[in-house]
Length: 140
DNA sequence: GCCAACGTTGGC
DNA sequence: GCCAACGTTGGC
Image 1: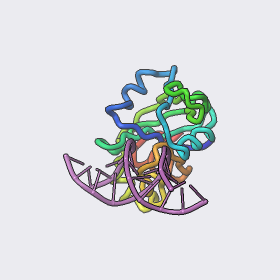
Image 2: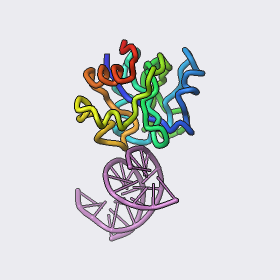
Image 3: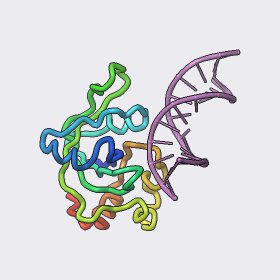
Image 4: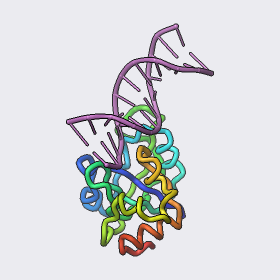
């Protein structure tokens, strides 16, 4: 299983909205960046991801699971753009802020720390464990 | 709200 | 195919 990180501005699509979708899940649409799209194409059902609020909050707030593999993005007719569906798994007991990630030497190579622009990122298994530890949350 | 970093577009 | 111009993202 692979691990990922999904970024969203809370004003646009928030964790609470994601939770409200429950088992139905929701398209992670609107991505117009090749690197982010390629990451979504690589995802398999059951892969886990962090849900990150960018801009205002700048913190990881929960864990999501991929529940549909890459398919055309319904918000455009442009066939270049695809997206996966994700559903909320559980919230972080303690949200992990970007500042906390930057402080932890174990996360110094994390994409979130080094490439703030990429909206869908890979996360290593080691980084996954550290983030869940910082968030006091079950990593499974 | 500002602006640096980055990605994309389009003229040549 | 290069690169300047432009638009967007997201940390600060």
